[in-house]
Amino acid sequence: VRVDFITFMNQVIDRFEMNLDEESNITLERQLPEGPFFVWIDRDKMTQVLDNIISNAIKYSPGGGIVGFKAAKLRQQLMVSISDQGIGIDYDKTDKIFERFYRTDKARTRKLGGTGLGLAISKEIVEAHYGRIWAESELGKGTTIHFALPLMNAKRRDK
Ligand code: ATP
Ligand code: MG
Image (cartoon, rainbow, N blue to C red):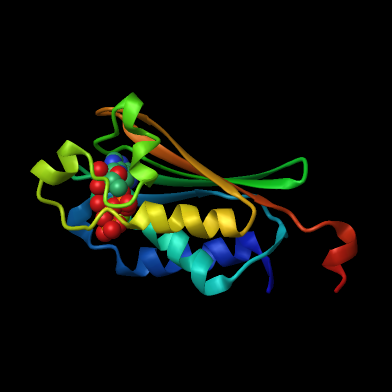
């Protein structure tokens, strides 16, 4: 369906905000523009993508910190990023985390639950929406997951 991604993202973030436990020391910080930015998405699938990324950001931030949300229009694309101040990922592993069952050593040794499928599924879903997803990270500093989705053009917007 046609969705204003900003409204949609705010709804997903609201749900995380309501369920945040205080011990996590996580603050959700939105830097989202007004919109509307219309995209054509499967709501349930895209919810799964955001859920995966946000729960990772929280899970891999054992010391808490800010989880930040940004979105912007770049030509005919909507650029979204979700950043954390957590454990980070080795610079040469930022592509691998999108592979099925891949988990970094830190994730394993810290015995954080998970199967290593979340991002692989997210990538499949984003690409099925003709989008791209990638990670930028610095070990010990934090991680940003970026994804881009094609924006609907003015003609299709009226349908
Ligand atoms: P699942 O999501 O299936 O429960 P998972 O979280 O281990 O398990 P993915 O979400 O696919 O699996 O992430 C793969 C791996 O990438 C993680 O195990 C972790 O090592 C690393 N990773 C993902 N997101 C982050 C992040 N925000 N900060 C640090 N490491 C991350
Ligand atoms: Mg995960």
